[in-house]
Image (cartoon, rainbow, N blue to C red):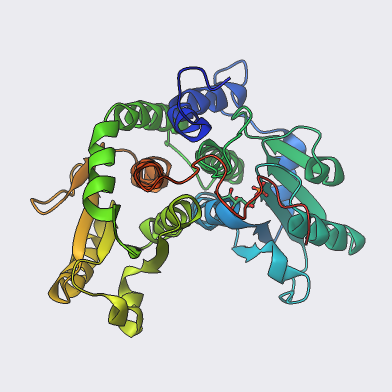
Length: 357
Ligand code: F6R
């Protein structure tokens, strides 16, 4: 059921605007307001600290989700890689709430944490694409992603769905706490869906960028600051897992503390510039790498663009940029893998869900 698509990954990238609209619908009540069941909002409000547990792409979604929840609802959030948590458990707060983010709902590392925190008597919410999955059954509460089956090993539509559901959870909790007013998230997510469509309609641009920067390179860096940093981490994971190009994501300011030594003549550096507050500083980081010979690919957002930019994404609410800035990175990774004759949907050494610890 790939239809006319050569790969599931491309189909799933293209489905993202539709998934956005499904999520907006699924989380609306009869008054056309965003809605999350009261027990879940109650559990959020009771918590003095939230612990997000996830792996891989879902972990990257959690990093963005932390910003959503802290900014909208004012509840402190920690984000942890599941495989580290069990033996490296931080000191827990008095009233923790655990949020498990997992496309499959079957990731063994996350399940091991869930088992342990349930034994300790804590509450858990699972955000998953699969109703009836292990993590959903064993948690107290579930929120579904409504992304439809994700077949390609590289996660794409589940990531943006996770971000949207986290934004809604943060927003509804914030409204209930009185910390969010006058913010029309339904409208903002609608703008996101339209922007996603525009990006999916300009695939040739991304194929060209992949050809220009990634056809023969050994490595590639992704830099960004604040939310862009987290999207860079996800972009680098996408690129390495399907194209086998060694890729790393860094906070813009962290490069010069060591990694800049790796920049050589022609090394591709993808820089994200969608955040006004750090626009000048990320552009400063680009100058630093260019001075060492890097081949920069700046992806900025409308309103913050500059002549030097390789691609400008449409403008969306500054909090929601990760939902769209990731799409160029997904498509660039896809075409890089294609140009390098890699098996896009089934990369070597990887399984869709990792059911061993
Ligand atoms: C990357 C990817 C993996 C998964 C990770 C967690 O594209 O798909 O990094 O994100 O294995 O899987 P879930 O979300 O099913 O727990």
